[in-house]
Length: 316
Image 1 (cartoon, rainbow, N blue to C red):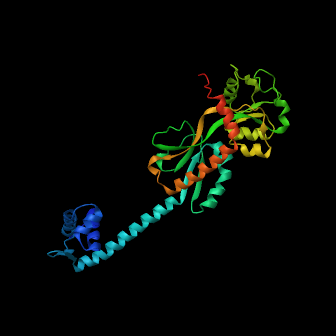
Image 2 (cartoon, rainbow, N blue to C red):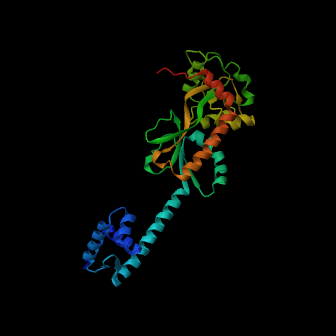
Image 3 (spheres, rainbow, N blue to C red):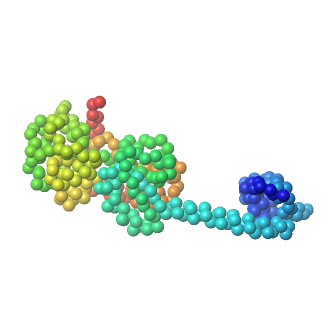
């Protein structure tokens, strides 16, 4: 008699396979084990419930009447379970969760995502913006766009485009930027953006010291906010001409100085090595790399000029 203990899943699985295939040997092959193992698990099940499920004949087995009844219900249950796994896999492949840095996510990626959705409407995109690298092993995010050297243990990193920056401003401030090349020269408007980028820009031009502390404008949290302030005419910003290419092409921003500096890093599309065969990640990677290649082609002259400068390391 069965009592309160439920039969083991291994025994039920062995019985269902043997009943469906009509053979312990075939069931063993399907389950990756031996016919003796299947027979053992079926006997364990029969002993636990106190009912013979198979008749063992000379060269074959056949279901008893109780076995037929159990087999019908077991097959339905396993078919429903298989279907739920398929539905879960389809749902997982239909949603792509991506985390990225705020500036590239806001200024470069988000305006392009409509194109990806047009190409692949079956994939629902979720975009998270974070300055802190999220753990891709936790399952919350499928992939990320990161900035760095491309070396992250356990992750596959695909290069997109280099990090470089130069001074940008609205056309109305070009005259005010004429003395920008000398960090000690008075400047009629504030410098916007990260002070260490400005120092690196001047260091790359051969100056030992950057601009004085009082020459900077309001400190903002991210590069895209600095650019927003520059677009409002509040100063000259140090920023990526690749990420803000559309503002340059539209004429809303222009180069305040033609000197371009490489940051010694790059933007990368990253995802867990264990997920490299995921269809949705593969489709997004293919599309993203094409967009990045187009961005590099549009900024080829700037990238070439930055490469001539070479890497400049800031002193500690």
